Image (cartoon, rainbow, N blue to C red; front, side, top):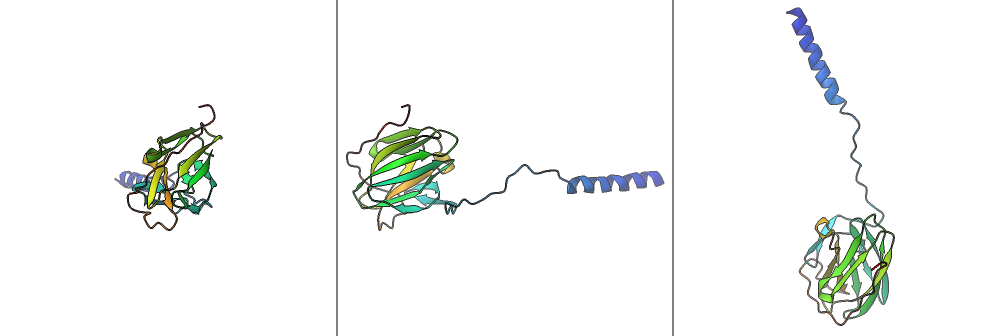
Length: 168
């Protein structure tokens, strides 16, 4: 009996020791980037990983990364055309699509491409990566002064053109 009690006590201590020493964690801590990321928000009816807003005039650079656009909201003069230089700084192929303006541009990792977009006359119009939209890779074009950042976006398109990306 004495040995059984001692064996039970040792097993109990061993179980506590093993539980307490759970091993090295492989999970990486989450970090916030210097981009001002503040999680997700709904923009023009689409859930997006938020990486800021930028007001633009005739051209702007858009960082495409794993799995966001920076800036996420591109504001401009209602009805104006803006040339966006899309720079894929991610590790996989990404895409920039705006259905209402017939834009569908693939961009390989380390490459860039240019597209011309039209800022909607009011409210906001969503853009997204067709490969990673479900992961929150989306954003919006918005008319300056538009308060419609959380509703469904309207917007009409005028004749826009796109340029082909590298290798396409």
